[in-house]
Length: 281
Image (tube, rainbow, N blue to C red):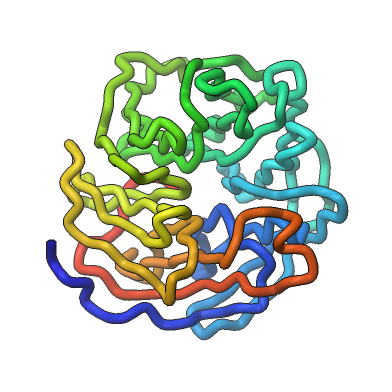
């Protein structure tokens, strides 16, 4: 296992629970899930609140081709749209998600892939595709707690972290957005991957909350890097910066909403890596 190039450096803190990091326009965009808001932060640590979402739990983020922000509202099973002025409902997914929805990735055409919120009866998880006109359909079922997702360069493959499945699962993306040719991209024994990102070597950086670390995993499952931050839970990660070699690491001390009540212990660290990011997000 190769050593990381540097120790993670604190970028910002005073969060409740950071999720869904996305790099765009020189900024890291992210949800403060239990802080009920969406923020941006620059590489100097200057933070700006994008939108307040009182009473909601924002999770996955993505962007339409015109730059509008899509936000998963977990418990309501909705995707919200923020056009930098107004907030509206982009897609109502209540007929497709019994327990709510979770993370999301949006492709270059504006099609969103959304995973279900943890069900009390796994493996009943599913992935739903939401087309640019707002229509939605199930494209994968029996996905054991679908979580972070990435789309490979060229838009040909979707990789999904199955948190309780302890693996990364890949699908071919058809021209109409359907998913086919399901296969294991990498097993993650004794680890439950959460948020993920992809680099140019096809390796996936995966947050491992219960193991309290981040791993860089090659196709097939070889772990070639591992990063931990003061025993904190790894929640999500993404690659960004000018050359996409800045790895953003989102951590928390707990994931239980009750335990998080009244706390602001969430943090975001950065570190420089050798291999730049690839694909979406």
